[in-house]
Length: 345
Image 1 (tube, rainbow, N blue to C red):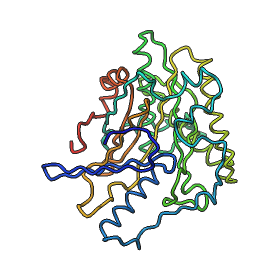
Image 2: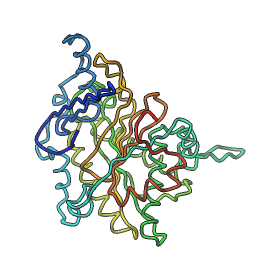
Image 3: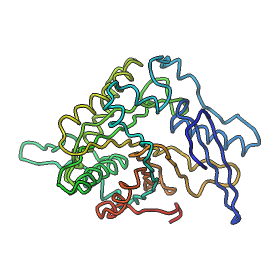
Image 4: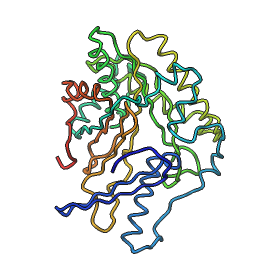
């Protein structure tokens, strides 16, 4: 499916191959839906197709506006999001959208369950024990999730990319945008709530070393992002104005990073689709052999999908051609991730 940004809310393409395979491509505008809503849509559509039109098992909910009334000052699309900052520098240099002459590449890297287990061990905070107490070096000795472990690892790799590009041992200060799903966190919102039910706060700028020793601190930074959302007014009071504050913090964090960092600044949007049951979609032909996600318009984007077995992660990563050439050849990356040409490998 050719990916273009337009005014369409929904696009579908079904391809039939001589080998007997079928591919179903779906585009759903982010103006009206997020990834979990897309999953609910696909599952509902598949259920209708398989049951000859029956809707008895469908349960999407369209009551989001009653929980969070619309805020008129917010942008209605991702492209307009970058217009929230008022400075020309922020508009032209600090967002993660591709420039008009930049060509992006979308590649998938598989983190198998065994490699994720190794990353979890590296990402878990190390404890120090004495005769009187036991303390954690990062304040939290819980085992990190798959998402946090892989993200902490990639954060280190992204930082190393900047060093290699400039060849001056200057660390690349990286900021992550980590969407937080509000379903299950805000009362009256569940997994079937349709719409955009996530916010995208930013981490602190960090430059982790490539020896991965900073992974526990990176995990802590990601946890802090989630904690701030859970303890803030957006969840506690259903205060939609908190979204505006998050967007303002987005700009402020960028400006601070530009003033304090001596190396290149990089923003990476990390979106987790883990545990979204796309592999349960059965149109009557059986469940899918592989689920893929394409991102053709933005650079520095990471999207996580479960592998079919459920234990691994397929990380779909979009970068400029120059950055991707460097990224996919880094030995540090290839020690834990396998580049894929198809999901059946």
